[in-house]
Length: 125
Image 1 (cartoon, rainbow, N blue to C red):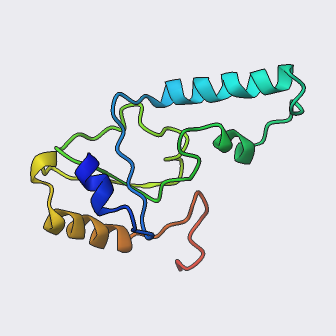
Image 2: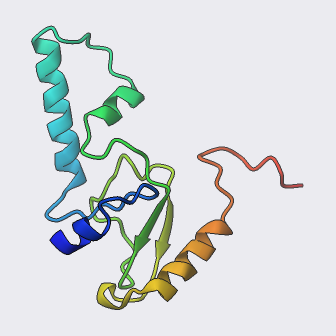
């Protein structure tokens, strides 16, 4: 991990998150406990919005693409809130063997998708 951090310390493009012993339900619970504490202490009004809810999560940003390796076809309590409008790709390659070629194939698949974010495609006839 230290080697990966050092090698990517000056990168500015993408953000890679590696979750070890992570559970999304726990993340949301901890965030709501923090929110409730702030309300109880008078630090904020009790008027939570979706945008504000995200701020209480470990990773507040929405995820564009989730690649699940090893042939598993489930999200397993992973980033439940953040994956709402994500594209999901389930690749059969085991994680240790998932290489640049496999990543390129997933990115090509992602590029071909019509991202509508819950809306209808207005380009179809």
